[in-house]
Image (cartoon, rainbow, N blue to C red; front, side, top):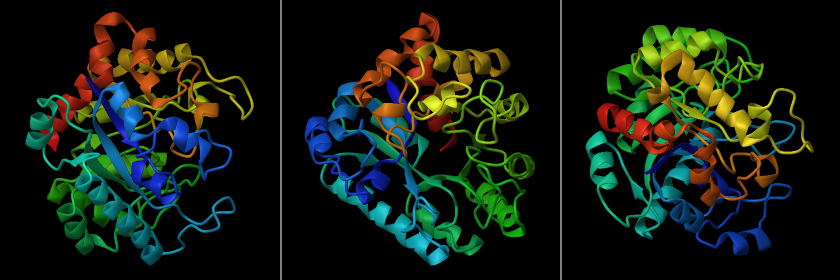
Length: 327
């Protein structure tokens, strides 16, 4: 059983990628330059993916992304477009949207079903204000990560800062509505603010800061805090997040490096709280995947570097336990 904690499926469609193509056909006509695609629905099927967290990710305007959003309205337009994409895929039989733990359990019991997708909002700027949360919950969003970089709600990756006043209100309302909190991308100050306010935290895609420096990654205390809330942490398959000092153009990080992150987390919180959050095609392509992961179908085999007795848990059983209990 394979469950992935983080895939930017609709974001890739918004970039012009047709995920219904074979991977070979997508690569021949890929509109995204410089990032060799690894994910299509046929690749997910070949890997045996059963369920994933599929993101609603609004890309902010930066020097590298001049067409990104600048305010709430722009972020909302992006997220609504991606929501509609997931619904079109569901209508076409490419996936099934799942909203509850019972639906996840029933889906996992099916054989031959398309991937199940639980909606995760990555970066909360599409949420107008606390009163808007009910709309997104009704649309099927079950997890929200308040930050990516800095948002109106929180400090984030390479953007230090605490939860804003609006962020504290948002996180409290998420807890009341039963929307789980994704701690990935939160800056340290925002993380600890959120940990005080929300009882249900996970990290869908975050490696260990003990191995790779920077606020994109979890400190040991952060990993323990998530575990204390019965949360799970997913491992990211980006070479820069696997090997300290890795730079673009370097040889791809070895899978042993990913195993080192997994083993470190396991020593802190137990193997039953370590899972996958590959983030494949999440702003990087094959060139930055760990060595041996050339397409999504290679993900199950990447667990061969882990002890045999923990592989099934990391590949899917640990996420399945959390999803069925807490969604």
